[in-house]
Length: 142
Picture 1 (cartoon, one colour):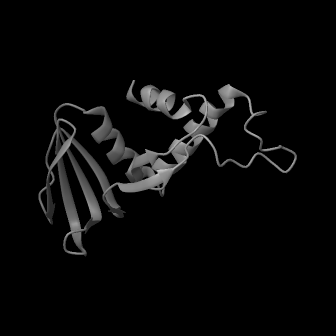
Picture 2 (spheres, rainbow, N blue to C red):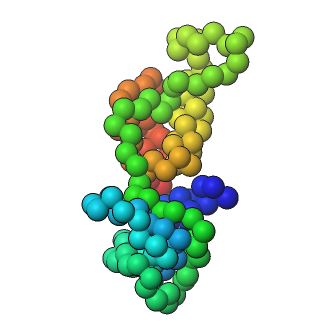
Picture 3 (cartoon, rainbow, N blue to C red):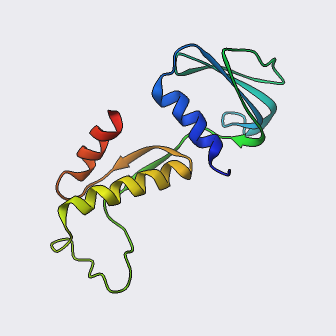
């Protein structure tokens, strides 16, 4: 349940869901002031956050209650190799020349999911083999 809030909020924002959604959160980190808004209400319309208020009223087409959780803005990782940096056991010889090309895509998908679970919504992919990052980006966009 630790990452449920990240997944729910990211899913709403990335899918561009139509209509109005309201997320009720125990706390929201306000990065501008460095403080938390308590009993916060996040209003989302057409996949975009339109308002965040402390102690606001909860109304909308869809209400998601994350009352016991803290919501933070999406984190950014400015240097990541999505399709590498994997541990497959001591017996695996990590030599990218011998690594099967389709496996890079699998590794990239797993690593992308791990980053999203950790709260990273934006990454700068800085290189790989076999155009894995480009293929992964295109698959996520679809």
